[in-house]
Image 1 (cartoon, rainbow, N blue to C red):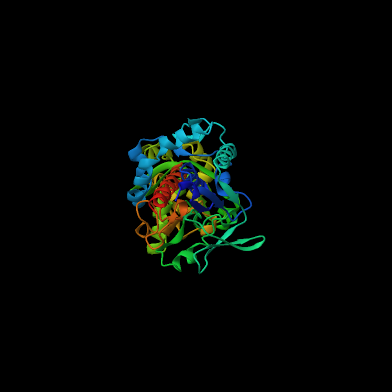
Image 2 (cartoon, rainbow, N blue to C red; image 1 turned 90 degrees about the horizontal axis):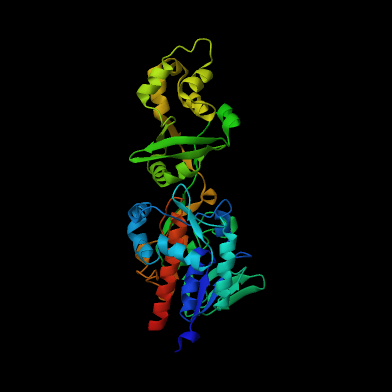
Length: 406
């Protein structure tokens, strides 16, 4: 059989699916991409609305450490298509990249849409076809793929299938986890989908919520067990969210699952020692209010003072030692992660035990999985997108090799 007669169906038009489609089309396979939405790459475009963080420029060892317990599964994928390969691939699309002050890598245009347009053009030129508003319904008795479309159900036969259906976050953009029961019915092992890079509930007082919801907390250090990181986050109506919270979200979520709550400690003045704070706070405040005293002596104001008043007993404000200790390690207790639909990404999915090294399902030969529907997670900062691209690359090459063998 000539390679040009081989066909592949890619289900899911996000980065993982499109990368798999590209590898297959380059190998001479006739590729069709099916997506449930009206246009492909919906979540990719949303992720790039405020600046598309493609990857990170930090040393590879540090980069790999961001995948935590998933590292052993993600590292082989990045060995063939890692951060440097991703940047080269973007450059080949005619789009330059740059490294921001934080080490994050962005396209020179900052937005996702120019990159996606250039990519889709290249895929179409290579012969890849697209069918939108095609929601996958599983398999028919004859092995055909079933799709719900505006014109009714359609069935498709393909020599190889790439599933790149996303996780369970942002269901309005197509990642709704609807594929879980379809694969479970075929005996595929799937870890429960859970929120990742998510916010958490705290249970603010009405006064604090009304005054500070939406306020950013800047330049603070979050401590939780062995985790320690400086950054920023936002006070929400129900609790906390933002990059610093997301960085620790996997640990915090798992602690809540195990013990019903999680308490982290917040250093509100990372540029000052506790001894320095004690000395500054011990100076007489005279007729000034405590808020004015905190602002003039230790440069705390606004939401940071609000957090102190929310959690520190009033009597401790008169004790410089206790107040200094609270500023350096303010305990904040989280009661629950926010729902999966609100999370930036999801943990859980098809387990790596269910897949071979090419990301083909053991129980379904010729069916490959890629992207966020796999059981892994990573913080924001370019790590999510890099691994999605890499898994699509691996699945695409794996499917191409399998087709040639078969």
